[in-house]
Image (tube, rainbow, N blue to C red; front, side, top):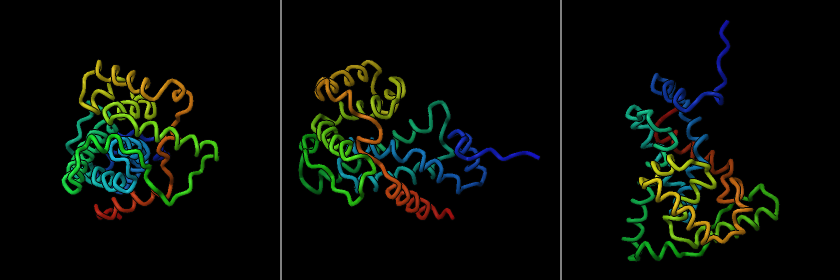
Length: 217
């Protein structure tokens, strides 16, 4: 008797193949797997948690609708991040048209997004997270995005280059400049669950919304 392989041990490409073969519900696994990384990347562009949720949902829906066009030369996560960045850029354009302000103003915006969720980190980590988020949001987006992808998401230079569509040299230069702007002490403190924390309630909300929009039961 053949024992079924646990879903959480499947690679992205294996899940994609099964989704395309008719197991549509498995797309939920891809959403949950990539939710935290997309949230952190989206926050580095938009600095508003509800806007990021909206953009993430659009990105996941677009990815699903074009899943048969995904070519496996690059990782699915890289492809998904490119979709998210495009949506973030479109959102910024619409936001600026509505507000009549330049994107450069947003890059220096200091206010942190408000959320109703209670972080599961310790009090120390919560306070530290606020400091790190404020520091990240104080530097220009092009450096912030590289920092998030390289230092927090742990993408390598080649992957970051593909996601942001910039040269590998630019990735390295921006990473160095980001660290300089954030000051040396910051590199001792950041980690995935501290900067732009992504919790289960938010994850469930995005999953349910995307699956509902795609009519996946």
